[in-house]
Figure 1 (tube, helix red, strand yellow):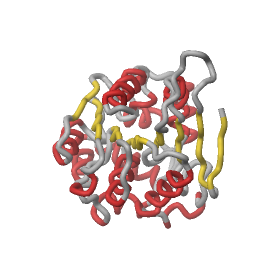
Figure 2 (figure 1 turned 60 degrees about the horizontal axis):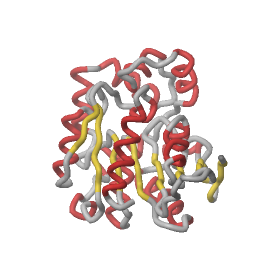
Figure 3 (figure 1 turned 120 degrees about the horizontal axis):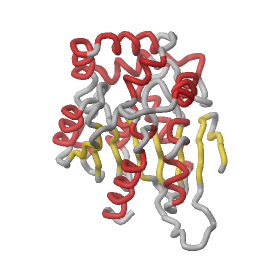
Length: 271
């Protein structure tokens, strides 16, 4: 286990164990977090699990997030800056990685793929290429309290425990874990949110050069299954919706179902 910094970008790393019988995979995995969080969300379960499957596994904290540069200047960063972070980390790896992006991280992956190739990419509850507008309208009419909570968090306010539970989880989660996640949650760049809403949407025809897997959660209030299916249709692939899970797939009690599905898809792609 290790934690590294690449030019002041936080990069959490897990390497395959030296135990006999673990086949080391040539292609690494790079995990990219969503809004209001950082690389730590992958450290809970996914990084160790995928390392045990033989993958060199990396989780990046985008600029202004976690232990990366620019925490005091978060609003100066847009989606293009987050894409540059990915370019920087990918360039430092010995082999181009599979990109796995959650929510805003999935949007960043799409923008990265406009100009760069990757062995494959996984979009987890990703902001769709059409942007955040549909999600925001849905929250406005169906979950106005949740939208208010997110706006407060984006502006540096604090989120209540119940608000975090409703936004991220469909399955039971320990109170101590919720408190821990809440302490790690942070504000998000207004500029990045506007980029995902109107000003820097992906060009799908350029993204489709890369093999894509599009995954969603049945009980996701932020990026509901209808938007996940819209993303999949845009890119000409099938969507897989996990029953009984919420937006925080990688932190849910049944996170391993998601991890196993990704592993099996990667195997099918020869990765």
